[in-house]
Image 1 (cartoon, helix red, strand yellow):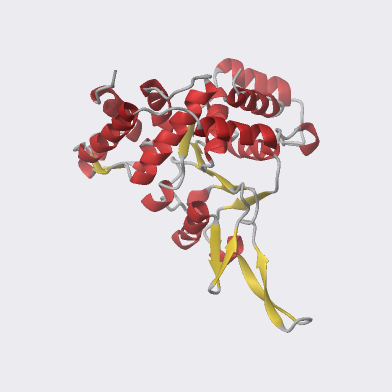
Image 2: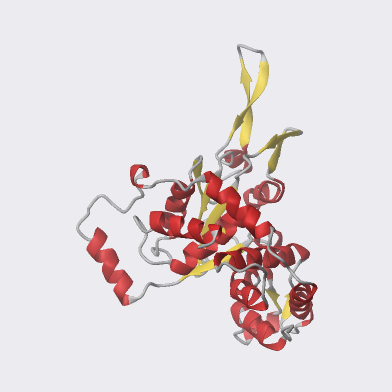
Length: 315
């Protein structure tokens, strides 16, 4: 088993202590962890998105903070504020919840545009600005955000620049009957709510994570494979159903995710199949559909499937 496979197995074991099912979601979270990307979990309420994010944070160790998205949430509430210190007669900066290794932003689309914009610098540059000062965030800074796409009242759609900073968007769907029955057997007799007891989760070895990142960086990527990724990007920009195609940041995310996917299967080089496997997580949320395409019922996932079918695969 490859080192990345060992990491995924460890994460799956720890998450399985609390979360039922979600194998594909665990793989997506592993991709983001190794590639230092951020994750957007999208799905209907009550499907365990918050529980999954909280348990994932416990499984990778480090500091954890939760931010609940609300209409009155302000940038200073998440970044921090300068407070006057009587003892030193100076203003001192008090960090907000954003200064953690893993930050869960629950219902991110309930926060206003001003607060959402405060995350842009943090997610891209791993730093924040306050009162003309720059403050570095932790090296392992990772944002896991949740949103419900079907609940429009009291929500603010995420702007394109915000969506582009999420490496992956994972659509969390309803579980199968068997998995839902397992949830009932496991938690149906408890009246204390479903949580993730910190004592029950053993954080994965940091050395294993570093080794996985080094292994992913060492995988061979051919010129033909890079050409294939660029062809997909060009096809998204030229598709008449799309008004805003894949950005250069999105192209990087696609290639980096494909590297990790190849490593998870123990390969020594990246193939077009690896790109196809991660495309549904890395591309759809970055595309803005043309108004006429949206009226016709087109979806971002359907557009991506069409791009993969039409783009020639290199030999």
